[in-house]
Length: 323
Image (cartoon, rainbow, N blue to C red):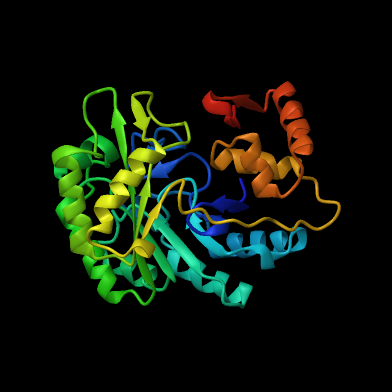
């Protein structure tokens, strides 16, 4: 796997060029029930436990390769996320510095994090240099946190994580955004209603973020008992947030949509790019069309070829993934 991928269309940020600091098997401090990457293969609780991590030189080599394939001017943001929790990578700060130096222009750098490492001063120092930090917060009480995010054994409790986000906000020069994944389950628990929702609302209010992202696990890949919410239900949740925040600070999945397209250079073989994309996230044909900026027929042909070779497989709701 390369450590730079995409760009992928982000409903939050437009065309996002991804930087994956955890390649190989999914490695994270959480084992979230809704994760599009499935269950966590390597569940760890600190950077010292990470093996074979991406180095700054790897990222720069991949950025150079991408600059030869596509016009980087079509990229709206560079997002550090990928195949696990990026703050587990001990070179996070150095990679950010080198990537900014290489790109040499005002493109925003975004970090997507589950916030579990923010209690560490060294991690917060690195994170504070991002233009946008998007922290995950799916629960406002300890029980719901354990049920949904299933943290590693030695990961801090929810109270400590929330306090760490508050510390980061004071140190951060850029914007703090909170992403909450609202869901229900067939097992009888949910974070979209009742006590669990009210506690989560209180936690988010206490953080006073620049933006609240109301999301739901629409892509398949998580546990079978997870159920995503409808756009109508998400809008109703958004109405609750509107009671406390201006409308432009509340981004709702399916409502707040950013556009954009990729400008590839001539003669590029898109087959390996499709494979690399599907390693990161399940996609529908229309998603791949939007990502790659090419026709529906061409993507359909590539998908048929990869299916025939047994490289990919079809999932529910028209999604495809690597077998």
